[in-house]
Amino acid sequence: MPRVRKGAARAQARKRILRRARGYFGTKHRHKKQAYNAVLRAGCYAYRDRRNRKRDMRALWIVRITAACRMRGTRYSLFMNGIKLAGITLNRKMLSQIAIEDPKVFDELVATAKKLSKAVPAKAAA
Image 1 (tube, rainbow, N blue to C red):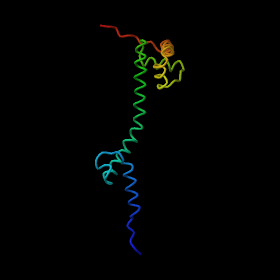
Image 2: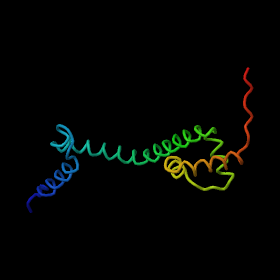
Image 3: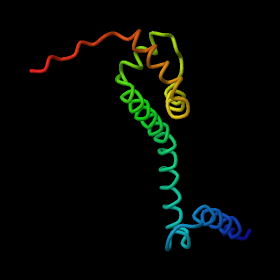
């Protein structure tokens, strides 16, 4: 029986790797070994950053809400505490959108939160 040397299968594997490495710089899109390493690394970064994007977006929403609260004379933590006590179940994404697109509604939310949040005594200036 003749020895099988994987001619077609090996060519297909090489083609599959090089297709995924299309657009990479230098030898990373030409040579199978370099392309394989680049594709593997890119996959790891893509997997990690799909999760990090969620973290980054939440941080962005918090920054936007904080800025909107400070413009209205309150702090983020007091605002969120008041919103929670009021039973308003809007998430941070929605709150940041409201702050940008509908300032009047956000003013009402801040007023509600100020009423219900615990008054924190100001530090005496020395």
